[in-house]
Length: 149
Image (cartoon, rainbow, N blue to C red):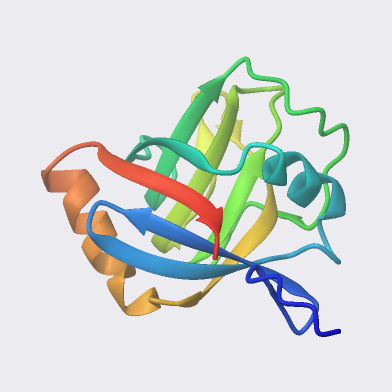
């Protein structure tokens, strides 16, 4: 009997991300960030607001405050994600947050440079990343949804 789970493609979990009217598909980086992917999967479907990052350059962020997602380690972490490499910062020096880079980014907060866990990579729709940046900068917070594809 064939397995017909829609979110699994060639052993990869794929998420659908919608920012306003723009749609993306992203691969969960389960091999490199298993704890982060497992914690985020428990939140799905996840809805929030994406706002322009204050310190990180060309990126949006989703502030999660003191929310504890149960992630106790850094995994696949970086301070310089490429556009479309989505990070989750589990908290510590700064608040828990998700970073959504659309251009050149150096992940930081008011306490200085941070490293976040690269747990999602956009694999479809990257041509819309610059438009996400334009909207969050000039139009303000945008609705964002993460769900299984």
